[in-house]
Length: 175
Image (cartoon, rainbow, N blue to C red):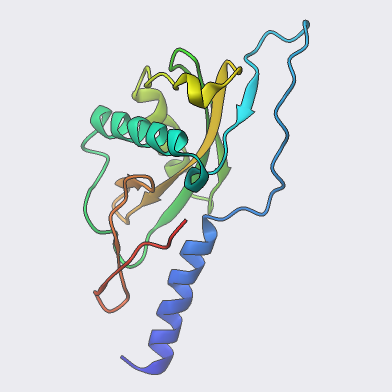
């Protein structure tokens, strides 16, 4: 492979990996007032700092996979993904997804719908632990859908390693 092709492949991989990052300022937890009727939500700490959130995201991802095995794929990720969609998911204390919204996408509306619908099709999700909820009635977190060219997806929480541009398996970027 020529130097320019390797450079281009490296830039594409870098773009995919940085596409999952967000530059938004984290929002403060909402405070419930007597006039509010919805659940009070507390933003959980990022997965590397919160084992409870990581375990919960894994359990939810496994539930989503089990609900639609023909839409998902396992194993290594291809060198180039068609699309990366990040959803913000809010789950109440009973495991009901009370809000599922696109947080970040690269414009494939059909894949955005597939990601949102995959959460809804999973039905009742695992209940968040009391450790994760604290004194809140719901928890919100981000999950990333990684779409192949054929429209099948993996969730980043469960994703395998990614093939490099030359077909070499590379380690997943640490979070």
